[in-house]
Amino acid sequence: MGSESYLSTEQENVLVLWILEMAKAGFPVTVNQLQDSVCKLVAKLNIKTPFKNNRPGRHWYESFKKSHPRVSLGTSQNLTGSRAAITNEALSNWFSEISEFFKENSLESVTRNPKRVFNCDETAFFLNPKGNKVLAVTGNKTVYQKVNADEKECLTVLLTGNAAGDLPPPMIESHGSLLVEVQMISIATIVMI
Image 1: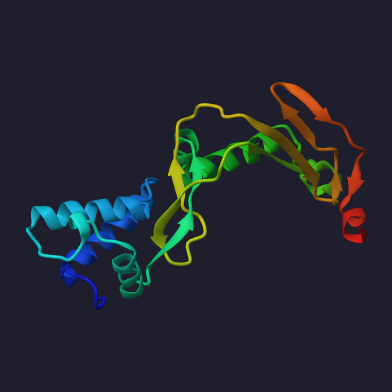
Image 2 (image 1 turned 180 degrees about the vertical axis):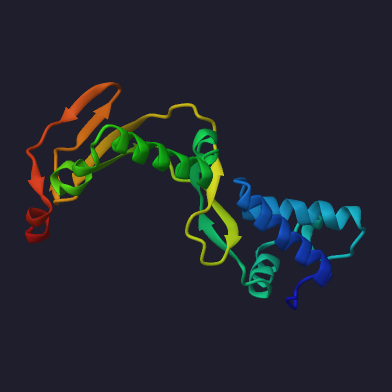
């Protein structure tokens, strides 16, 4: 427990557990939320503190961070409910179904030709600010914050590559219109640039 804390070790440990469980559930805690929660806790338990209006400030927060190195400040990433619902079991089942499809249709040889094995991913570049600074487990680089599935203004980019290192042109789209068309390039070309 830090020198400026007015909460017991047990009370601070409960706060740490709350922070970590909230982050795990997709609802990470901001510094302001932590301070507001401590304010309510101090008022409810009638704990005497020098905090202005029972709300701890920056010095208390810095002391709390030093006392609990498992908690650190990071930027959350937005994750919609549909993506959060995907499980390891669902992914495993998908791969099993695809493997079975290839076997049933005698297509296993397709996966042995690197020019015929592609991976693609679409990503959105939002034209709005990033997520909030939130508290989570130290070293955790993926702290998600669940958000509404409402579309925000963004550019959508579809990147594709095959196992041989070829990169077809990316598709860049905004409001349903294709913005950029480029030639097919090879990963070797990018390395030389």
